[in-house]
Image (cartoon, rainbow, N blue to C red):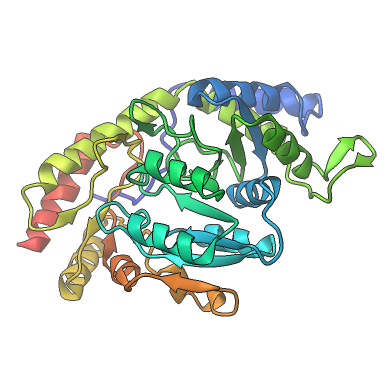
Length: 371
C-alpha cells in the first residue's frame, strides 16, 4: 500500500459541499477582500486561542515581519533566532533590515538551547529574539524564557507556525506571549486553501500597528501613518479557514491519536523518538525521530521509498549552514549540535484521519528495516 507523508485532501463529510457553496456565494457578490469572513475568523481565533487580538495577513512569513516591525525592530538591530527552524524565521529578520544571531538546538526538544540563549542575550544585548515552537509542541521552560526577556528588555516574538492548538501548562500556548504568529499554509494544523497567516497579541498598541502595517500603513483610506505593505488575508482564504475551524478539534484529536500510537510503539524500538516536555500537550503536527547513524537512516529512507511510504526531514539543514545566510549572519552561538541534529532528523507520516491500517503498515515496515 502507499501512505503519503502528508495528505491534505482528507476532508470531513460535507466540508467540500460547504466550501463550494461558499465560493459560489462570495463570487456572485464579488466579495474578495475583507468583510465578514475575515472579521469572523479573527474573532474565532481570539476565542479559540484565548488571546485579545488577532491580525490576519497574507502568509506566515509576513506575519513574522509584521511582528518584528510592530515591535520596533529596525535596521541593524540584533535578533536571536533558533539555528533549527524554517528559513522564513531567518529571512524575516533580514527583510526588516535586522541581523540574526543563530542559537544552538536543545536536542531533547528541537527548541533553542536555553543556556546558550541566555549567554548570547547577555553578550550581544539584542533588540529582540524569536523562538520557533517546532514539531507540534513548544520550547521548554517557556515561562522562564519569557520572564528573562522581559527583565532584559528583549522583545520576544514566538513563531508558532507549527504549534497551533498546542497547550502549555494547561492553556493555549499563544495566550501569554507578548506577540506570536502562525501560518495557514495548507499543510499546517489549521491550513487554508492557499497562503495565509496571523499575528496574535494581548497588547492593543502592537495589534493596532500590526493591522496598519499589513494594510499599507493606513490610518485612514488615503492616510498612511506608516510605510507598510499589502499583506491582507483575502476573503476566500478566510472563508475556507472559517469552515475548517468547525472541525479543528476533531483534526487535532485525530493527530494526537496517531502521535500517541507512534509514541507507544517507538518506545520499544531501537530508535530515538523525541516527544514533548510534560508542560506541553502537543497538537500532533509532526513525528520527530533522530537517527544519527547515516547508514541506518539511509536504509530506512530507501526502504520507505520502495514500500511507498512517505517521510520527511524537518529540517535537513541548520540556518547557519544555509548558503543564503553567509552574508547576513551576525553570529552563531553553540557547539554545533544543531548541525548534527538537522542531519539526523527523520519524520514519519502524520496528518488528520490516518487509519489503523496505514499506521500499522508504517510501524511494521520501520521495525523490519531497523531489525
